[in-house]
Length: 353
Image (cartoon, rainbow, N blue to C red; front, side, top):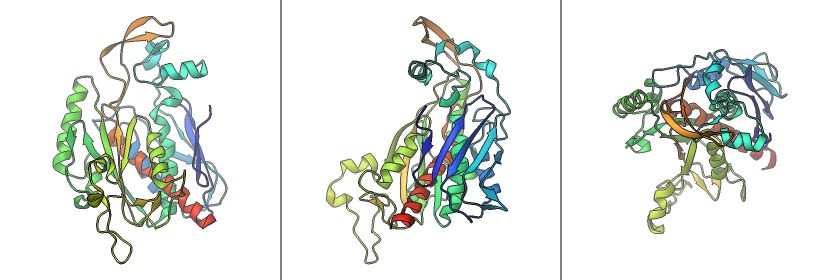
């Protein structure tokens, strides 16, 4: 299986399955001498881990990271940083009923046809549990970036939308509620909606917004490695993501050029920021902002018609522990992937410019 690595200079390779012994990764290219705050890494893992509230999967995993190499005396050594996160609460029997069955909208069918074998226990390698490794690497990337601040938050659940301008959001409120929306009134509505959906044995989608502040001018490498292109790839590589837009996004397609152009101030900043902090694929020093759309979780606690690996039409009913809505736990994953992209371009800038 190819495609398990991300990044050019700041590179992450991950390994492991949902119900295997452990998941882990190797971070290559991290500079030496970087002070590492282990508590900050664990905090991001705690924000992603299952079982943290009543509106997420009830699988109980401590998700404690164990570093195997690359860190000594609290600092990076410049050598590959190896780490693992052990799986502590596997219930593989929850998946025995789908051993020979392809779940709708999962990777079961495509993995089986591509590789001739699949790990049906929670989806194996295709499980979103793999993202735990990205959060570890992203937390280290954040520490490399220092002054850059990345704020992801839940901006919608189903048709409940956070209708506030970005510059009016108080990101200190994001972690004040279990849905991770920086507006208390909207958060309460989102939480109630997720609870209703869970009682129905169904799932619901949503969006995660992200704002990145204090980005230096000059990150991004045209023509094919534009900053927004790499951010798009990073976000679309996250499980359940169906869409990515930055700056004015699709709304910008409805505007005239006279409305959409960001007029310069004398210092190089712009009066508006419909470009989303990126022009010509290069950061311009303004805030970068984007939205990531997540589909409803594919496993539902209802009967559905599907096929087995012999092509027979069968009925199946979802079992196990699953998120009724993925977006609350996706917030730190979006932050992590954004940090990996920026850390990579930061090192490319230092090396080549």
